[in-house]
Amino acid sequence: MPDIQIIEDADEAPISLYLELEEGKFADLEVVANASVAFVDAIREIAFIIDPSISIRIEIKSGDQGSLSLNSIIRIINGRKKKATLTALILTVAISLGMDAKSWLVGKGLDKIIELIEDKKLSKEDVEDIAKKTAELIQKGAGEEHARKIYTQIEKDPAIVGLGVSPGADKKPLEIVPREKFHEKATKPLVEVDIKRRASTKDVYVKVIKPVLIEGKGHWRFAIEDIRFGAKVKDEDFVNNLLHGRLDIKMQSGIELFVQLETIEEKLEGVWRIKEWNILKVYEIIVNDDRDLFIGNSE
Image (cartoon, rainbow, N blue to C red; front, top):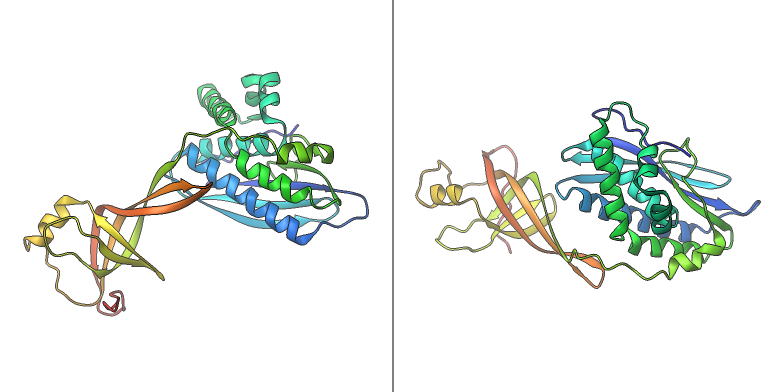
């Protein structure tokens, strides 16, 4: 059984979705594509539960033939405790998607999870914390909704006779779920997870479209690349200084803010939807006449 080991201070780690194929058969591309989307969704959901502050990107690395292994890289774009987060994330994805997670946990317990973390650079306390976090996520059913979608898709293709998740292209899956278990996994009742609303923050540059220059809590208009959105500016010091003329900002094109942006989402019918944005902190004001950063008030 492969061990989980993350390079010290690394911001990325490999993971593979392994589809075992019947000899001489090829997988249906649409089935694989839909299963891959559900796999990515599961990784994102579990990553958010572990640490809402991180942003991740799942990149395709390669795909092996024979039995189909979709080799990917999970890359943390920003966030804290990257090594612990990546280790807990890969463990949870591998166990919850690629095996009978609850039975495995009952039968093996924390000791077996700890055995999988073969990393000499992690302290004993860190390893135990990661194992406890992984067990907690599995007990709460993290990723189960997306696991059902994966198994619903691959059940449609008779060429796929097994599924597993491995921590890297050169490692075997922890277990292989055989085809006769696909229907059971696809129709397994979901564990109700209490999370219905979530918030995340990240530091970004935003372009000012329409400021609010009166007292109150109106929504400013901003843009990030081609995405336009309204957000309340909750940095009271910035707002007060702006409204009372203590900031040297002229009404001109080329205004950009470096801010802490909060995104609040709610889960409706199983889908996360953005409900609001808030600017929690304004770090920097940038006025640049050489670039067209100020989008005209055409809306």
